[in-house]
Image (cartoon, rainbow, N blue to C red; front, side, top):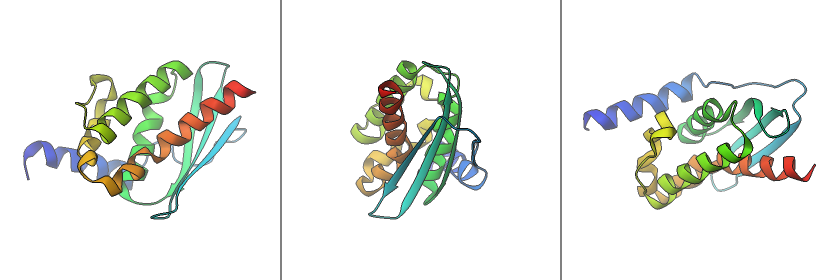
Amino acid sequence: MGLLEELYQEIILKHYRNPRNHGELPGARLRVLGHNPACGDRVELQLQTDGERITEVRFLGQGCAISQASASLMTELVKGKTWAEALELERKFKAMVVEGAAPAPELGDLAALAGVHRLPARVKCATLAWNALEQAAREARAS
């Protein structure tokens, strides 16, 4: 295993073992559940907004290291972003893990999940929290 792969594995395990923004968000304006029935991974995304900006985001969930690390990394990245900015990050993340695009610099440590595109069964794990974010954006705009 090369140095870069070791670093990426370390980032994923760090966020899996000690997830950021994990836990209940009292008074959450939006709650969206993401579930992957194929493997049982679950993520409940909870958000507060001030209209167009995500002011707070937390998640509850259980599942594999990839799904939980992706949720942890995503919550760190989208907090404070507008919906438009968050959805642009989602687009870049999915291009990386679904299509194998080079990691965009603004994805930061999410680049650790770049190799997921070579593991089709894991793509759903990596995108679970991001799909919940997209659903939350739709619900926010509808309300």
